[in-house]
Image (cartoon, rainbow, N blue to C red; front, side, top):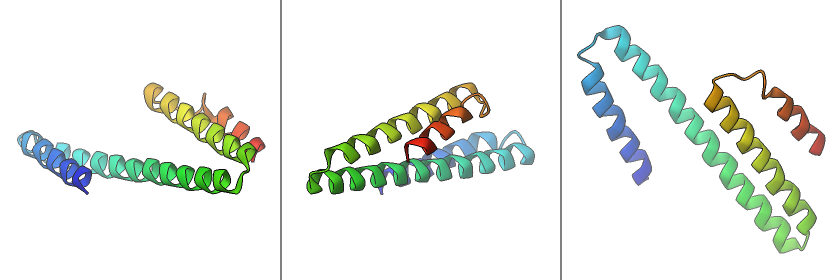
Length: 103
């Protein structure tokens, strides 16, 4: 909740400074803010899902499945890092097929 409030405050400060540049730049900032918010929700959802699955499998005593879930999440994180740092999706798309094979 506090993180969301700080994110909104950050967006408003950005809007204040970018607003002096023009309406096209404000529109670009709004689109970028929406994309960042959606990606943040996606990452949080993956993190919560991973924790729930690992807790479930660990409580069940199935440590092998717990390790598989953790491995898949780490691979997904590495793919996300590579795509985000390069700005390219195609070189890292092979990792998605690798994850699908693990399932």
